[in-house]
Image (cartoon, rainbow, N blue to C red):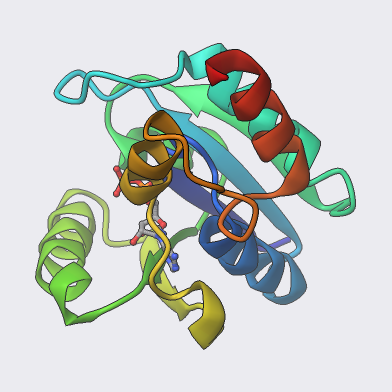
Length: 158
Ligand code: ADP
């Protein structure tokens, strides 16, 4: 059974993240999408809110699990029996950071490989930070996030 971990901040989950997740779920037997409790990043939403919004956005994917974790991604992956880390690539700007991250992870545990997926072009420009910016300035986030995320955020911040 091939298990992949899709780690990230997902603050909040966007249609770009969901597209990567859906493709991952087609390729691997099981995908665990896991919110990293990153000590360096001050969150916009709480970890519980992010997990709940991911859950609501992927009810149609029956081989996907939602979780959160502390500590090193590679240790969490090993603990879950995963052999793959799933990451998304948008533009060249993502590449340098993602390459460094995957090589660090590979140096720590070479049994776990990073697989990069590219989204459909219509989702390529979407980021959680631009969603937050648009939301907090009263813009329409419909095209950027799953419906459940939009409903929750608009209710909370209107
Ligand atoms: P992190 O803080 O770990 O970068 P993010 O939630 O920002 O967490 O992103 C998680 C992963 O999803 C990263 O690999 C990122 O490049 C990817 N990603 C984010 N938005 C998109 C998108 N629109 N299309 C493809 N991949 C994306």
